[in-house]
Picture: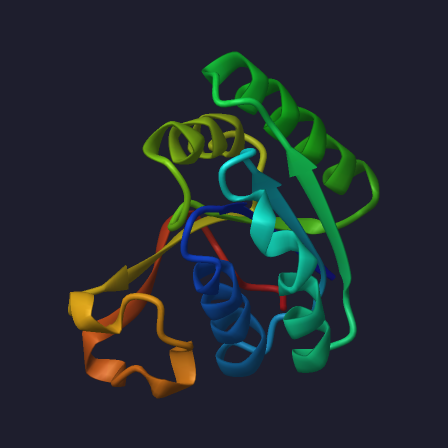
Amino acid sequence: MWVLISSLGLKPIVPLNVFWILTEELNLDVKKVILITTPESASSLHWLPKIFNKMRAIKIEAYRVEEDFDSMTNTVRVVINRALSEGFKVVVDVTGGRKIMCIALFNEAIDKADAIVYLMLNEPMYSGTFYPYIPKNITKLIVLRGSLSGG
């Protein structure tokens, strides 16, 4: 049983696309999605959970952090530790959000998460497009660290 932890940036489609790949292509049993958001990107939280739940009935949690590294790092640390204590395998997505958020996620996940992933998109014109509509030859989910085995 997995939890996906992802930063929510100005393109909220990014965590949806990673979720799609994990659940529909890799058949991971993702039971929870945790979104880390800044005040700037929090506006997506009123509709994004509905889309996740239309894809698959899962639990969605969101944590709003201030735009400073210490706040981000502390929140991510607590979120990862809580997920691990609940028995989840943890996959951290560092694709979306501000660079500082991705660094905080990577920094805290490097020794704790089961996998750290990044969704590579080689054609900017598909930025903001739902994954099933992106040609497969221009995108790839890269496992930066760890493994997605044990579905």
